Length: 317
Image 1 (tube, rainbow, N blue to C red):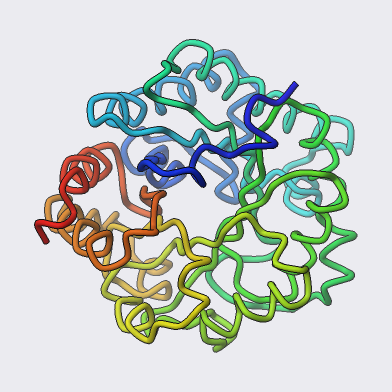
Image 2 (image 1 turned 90 degrees about the vertical axis):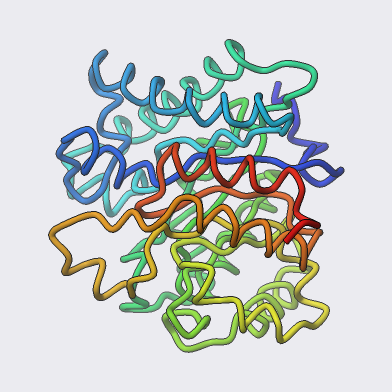
């Protein structure tokens, strides 16, 4: 039985940390080859499983040392059918690896959770296409059909919730929310933003959240921003509005580069961990309803440690 599926503790107060950029950490810091950025493929081997397990420990320690909760996001961002096919996975093998990923996060929770540090197991989804560009768009109905298979697998595990990262458009977010509702799974929807604070489709974040809520009866537990630097979306947040209260989490890039620049760069721009921590502190001071903080591309355990320390006293910003 899922521990927190019917009562997510991150909605009840307190700060929750997440990890950083899993794929960029594995590629640039660990020297791991990840075809199609598919970290779930590491679950095929004992060594790969240990690498994924060890990866999470410094982030969990950052949460523990600061008195925060922690959200364990699994490595299944690329583990949907189109990407699985590209990597040679059958339907059955892909279902098995999604279950294995949840099992790994459950093992981590069993080993590290304390009464003072609740750990929420979140099954991760990614977009059908690229997380940086909108590409060919599906209808909401097509998105429902596409994501139903992976969400159905997760619903039969002990995962507490779903989180869909790097969503580039509203139709796919609507489809995921509808499928999650049908499966009885809480879901968080996280949008990719460009340097102008808008979705890759050009939609304003306020309009995207409003459209998804209108089409789904506000089913999403909350919304997040990821794969953008705080300087990219500060002005978007300052616009304000009722939609802002639906935004509960931020997983920012370490780099201020655009997505195009990141795609073309041969190196990893890790930015300044201390500066990023200060920027998060300022964000939480201005928007105290934001309770979930972590990293995305280029962010590693150094960044999350700085964010965790800085956010202990956000009012000091």
